[in-house]
Image (tube, rainbow, N blue to C red; front, side, top):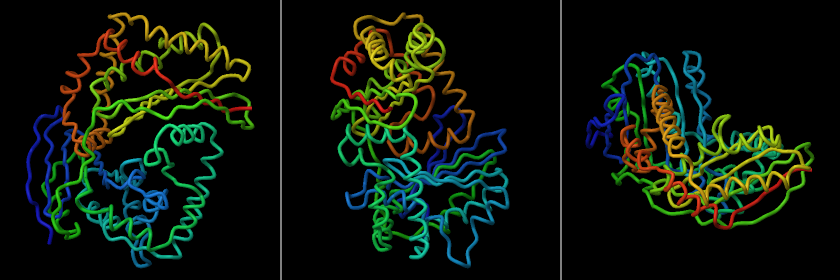
Length: 419
């Protein structure tokens, strides 16, 4: 039987303490009681995402995400939990696979054991694998119909090495080829106790979480918890410039710049810079491209940070006839970032707005559940908004300018998709 190896209370968290328990099979649970909430949120993470796949396995973690919801003929856990009010979901990322349960907090203890059993003792039926592969192939085809999704996948494929760059969903050819033994072997290798983090945020206090875990966790030899760790690096990408012809009315123009790893010292500078450029009606790009020049209807950005690398992507939707003018206008804003400094008051206001956003997000149990788990997974040890405030307080117009020179003064990728 699995037992709790160590347990400690992490008090340095604004919304109340976190109870961290390490089990003698290497698994870790995190429990956070949020008062005055009716909800409970459970996230079960396995460090088994697409990053760990070999080339012939590309897409297999995503297949497993689907297959772990398949039950034996005499088991009806999902139906039972959903009828009783639970909401169950899952997703696969580059670095981990996550299974989610949301329910009313008073039912957490009665739901948790059944939820965990689903993913810890799976059945891999060959006929269901064949059916689910067909579903996933349809999902991949639908992604290809979404031009922006396809463009982002193309950017990742060209910018990064294969481990990060390959699609989480894999190729249709790969998915169709997966055998039952391949899927089972990947599960045994990566869905192990020491690669598992159970994160729970609940409006109702519970001392039964560990005993439920001990009852259902698989009894495995102890291995120290595997964690992704942290590396301070600028992600030097493989850059390119190309056009992809697609039948659509508008053009999507994307720029991809070298980004930052998750724990890079300038990560918070990038957060503030991105807010200044893209967030809100008063952002630099919205003001110039929408209000002054009328070149775009929509725009967006994404900061993609991983353990050892990262990218910073800008996305603009415009008319094909305006592409050249748009590119020139974007360059104008980037040159400003490189050669001049943002107004100090504007930077302070943006920093305060970001902190306000953190405060608001920490009112959402789902956000907290994800946050405390990722702190465990990446080991960044910023288990409070206070820690993040200390980091963002160091951001200044000068530090933003320095970062801008580092990423905008270098080579970058340009992808145009449209007619």
